[in-house]
Image (cartoon, rainbow, N blue to C red; front, top):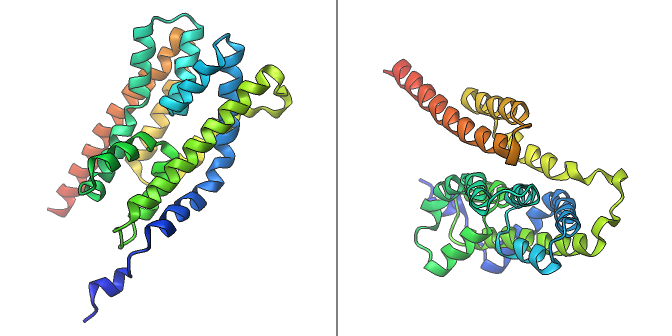
Length: 245
């Protein structure tokens, strides 16, 4: 009989886990940097102080929410609407945290706070692969590496975007970098009927309601698509259970 510890292998040293996380995040950083450049340039071009734009990236660190909030602020939306938009757009992070909870439950509070702050779509996508491996003893160091690599890249690219301001050539079309990055992360997770229906519903709603003021179409698309996805998943589970009964 095999020893389960032999199957999973010995735990990797924290330092090696950390740098493995940094290394595995590098391909995704290629898409993150242009988005940070755009955010810095747009924020500066909209008339916000450089320290305010950089502070937004330093403290909020949520690319999609930052772009939505910036658009709302420029459109003159009330602060409460901006806060609500950030809350709804980032609501998916609660699902990310829930999926990692069993792996991180035994960590000290300081680790949980740090990792939750660094948790983004890109970090979740890469760390999910690592947590899928049998040996997880030092996997939180891997997650720290992915998160810090993203955070540092986002701050650097935002600062460069602020410095360049409106000097970024329009011919670069960097505005497509963030959507393409999200599509690259999303596509591998669309694996069954419920996820395909959810992706289709969110795409149709986001495009169809794109003309609403204050980016309200995006918020409605997120709420409806998440609800539709949960309903579809429950229906799928019930169907599978009935067939297995």
